[in-house]
Figure (spheres, rainbow, N blue to C red):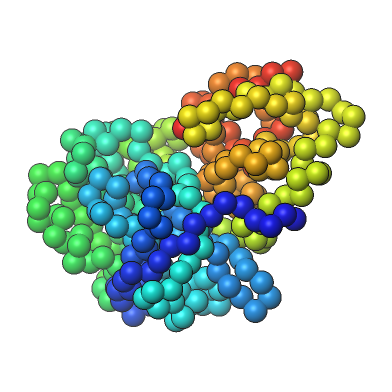
Length: 344
């Protein structure tokens, strides 16, 4: 491994206790740093542990269209390395190392009617989308927010205020396990039916999202209009670079002519066919975005404009994303003599 990837140190400016087991944190980027992001994207933070640093992804609950600050929300998870560190140890004034925002969990158009589902801390990217759509879009928005009980509802006051401010566009349904029981496929299907023409976005625990997905499909919502955000704990340190020599050495094997557009500049290389795109670009010194390097988070997603690649793993891109040309840089290997890639 080399010394590490380009990253930023964010300063903790404010910590707000949202519920007994969740807090939100305002993070300030360094002066002059480009921290533009899209609603629904996430940050990858470097979390210190006794055995070494690990990476954890946390969605931004702030909106680039509404808020002047970066804010994440983190709910404590039993034995969760990152969530416990943030809820117990982080203090105002601390610096946290961070990769640039990533992810594709964002609407193509904020004028679409949106059906949003959030479970627990899954409200974080959903809130970013909701606030953005209300500010710059024209569509109607329905939010179903599931929690165990009333005291576990994150951003309850903010959601109430938004619903009061936009009664003609926003409808919020709180689904409390202590009152309504667990969301069932049948009950969700009955609720979804009037909104089956909406575009759906889901974030929350896996069983919740699986149930919602089945209910949406029962109502005839096509997969192209169902967007799911999934996070998994990262095993490796995402802030460490792959070995530059191994990533750029073709070993005398076949190469592909690569043309890549990144940060407004175009670069051309001979890309070894045995080396994944992201590893190759990082070894060449390019600041290609990424987070997990496992095909599980979409931070490295880029657009294939020409040629063909194969993805070793893809656990995040939906068929609609694939149809639009998105591929995962961390998992892509070249198949054709020429490949043209663009980072949007």
